[in-house]
Structures are given as C-alpha cells and as structure tokens.
Image (cartoon, rainbow, N blue to C red; front, side, top):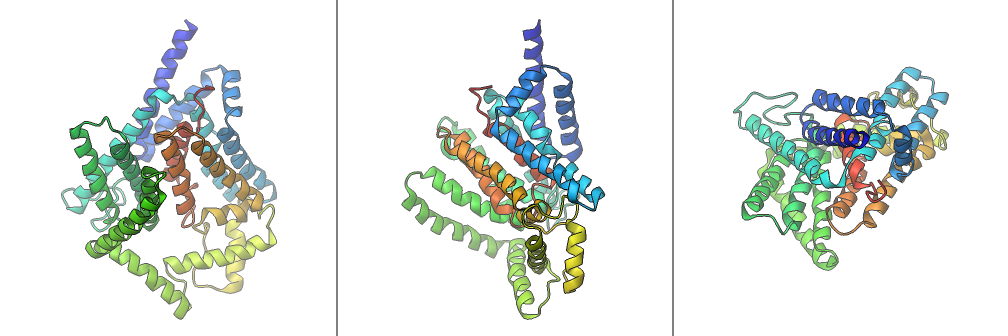
Length: 403
C-alpha cells in the first residue's frame, strides 16, 4: 500500500511539473498556483528523512540554500529591515523551490518537461505575432510595436532565446525526428528568431547571439576551427539582417550608441545606458567601503541614495543597479558574490562531466546565458527568469543514479 501511495504521489508530481513547465511562461498566477501545490504537497507528504538526505546529497541544493541563507544572515547588519525582507522573499525560490524540485524531478520525464516548455513558448510566439499584425488587441504589457504578450520584454526575450536553443538543438541533434517534425521545428526556430527582433528586449537579444555561438561550438565539437569560422559568418549576418529589416531592433541598437555618446559628450546619464553606467560607478563606491560582507540585504537603496546625493547625478535613485553581480556584492560583499558564482561553477562542472547529449549541452548553456544577461539586470530577482533558472536547474544538475 505504501509503495502504491508513493507511486501515485510521484505521478502527481510529474503531472504538476509538466503543467508548471507549460504554465509558467504564460501566467504568473497559474505558475504560482502550481508551485504552491507542489510545495504544500511536498511539505505534507512525510518521508522527511529521505527528502533531507536527497537535498544534502545534492551540491546544487546545498549551494542554493547557502546563497539564500546569506541573504537572511545579511539582515543582521541591515538598517532597512523592511526592504531586506522584500529581497529575502524574492530569493525564497533558492530555499524552497529548487531543493524541493531536485527531489521530485525524474529522468524519464525530462523530455516532457522540455516539450511542455517549448509548446508554451510556441503559443506565446503565436500570440506575439497576432498582436504585431493587429489581429488581436495587445495582451498584458504588449504593444503593437513591442508585442510581448505574457510578460515584459525584459523577461520575454531571454525566454525566447532559451526556447530557440531548445528547438534548434532538438532539430540538429535528434536524428530520429520525422520529416514532418523537422519542418515543424525548423519553422518555429525561424519564426521565433524573427520574433526576437520585433520585440524590444536587448538583454534577450544579446542572449540570443551568445546562444547561437554556444550552439555552433556544441554542434561542431571538437571541430573548433570550423565552428569559429561559421560563428564569424553567421552571427554578423544575423545581426546585419535584423538591423536592416527590423525597425525595432534598428532603433534599439542605435539607442545604445546614442546613449553612450550622450553620456560621454553631454555628461548626461538620463538614459538607459547612462543610468546603468552611473549605477555601476556609484555602486562601486559603496562596495569599496563594504567589501567583505556588504551593507546588508536591505540597505542598497539607502546607501545608494547617500552616494547619489553626494554626487548629484541625473540618473535618479534606484533600488537595483541592473546588474546581479553588483547588487549581490553591495548587499553581501565578496562573500555573497562568491556564493552565487559557486552555483554557476557547480552547474558548469556538473554539465561538463556529463555524457554527451541534451543534458550536457543544455547544462552548459543555461548558466552561460544567465552569466551573460546578469550583467544588464538582476535576473535572479525577477520572478519569471528566476523560475526559468530554477526549474531547468532542478533536473539538469541532478545525479539520477543516486536518487
């Protein structure tokens, strides 16, 4: 009876995980509901000794809990406890969700998790085009000029880049795909790539180009010279084509150069790039005086305001320097930064020690892409992107032979 109960519970978990993979790119409320059900079921289902042993035997789970715990510890030397608790709440996926998911994901269901996510991203892409062609009214925060239907472009484009990787990898590596399936995957790889440049997420677009480079080197491994030559040809070709054909991408690229020029020549930081430069400079002034332990989990806004008032920059105040590395270092010092980087180090080490295939390739690309986009924003604080990172981490870095 006990074995039957656990078998049924495992099946329930798998249905919930597949549902989560499909729902979380589409709706915050739906994703949070499924996450709540998973966490509550896990907490109430007993067998705690086995669960505890599974968690402590997984290095990623331990590092995840350590990263979260340092945020809690950082409350001890923070003055703004209210904001500190807000940050702790945002980081709670590293305490609850990732360790819990690491205990319930199953190797034989990975293809279903990935397929559900691809299906969801295909649906969001269709909705994006329907908005863009003005067939339906804009959804959520979407506009005709920036048709991101289920989330803001800050999150949508990284999701899209990751979805393109999954589809293209399947197309290139799965030799058993039928002719119809190959056409289907090729169609969505192409249309998603076009969709990347009619929407406005620059970080996601940078992530897209990084993804293309990694994918080329993975596909042509160990022929690195051939991969390098193709990279030199393909990446600039895509960039120039997008720049020539997409007014949205053209404007976003030009805005980068205009912002940098304005910052250098007019000494103004009242634009996207100028603000980020100023946030970085001011944040480093805070770090210099709080290098080891930081200012505390909740004190970035107040400490930044002190530097801002002293320098009287026109970038304005902020609660976030739009850089995950800098935010973590300001809050928790080099100790906190090291704890975060250890997560990525373990992921890459685990993936590179895996056998060749989707688990190895995807295990490498996930941390690499996040390491790239975290230079432009605090993507481990954002709800959508944190769920993306946590969900895929829960099965890519799990030793299924031990569990």
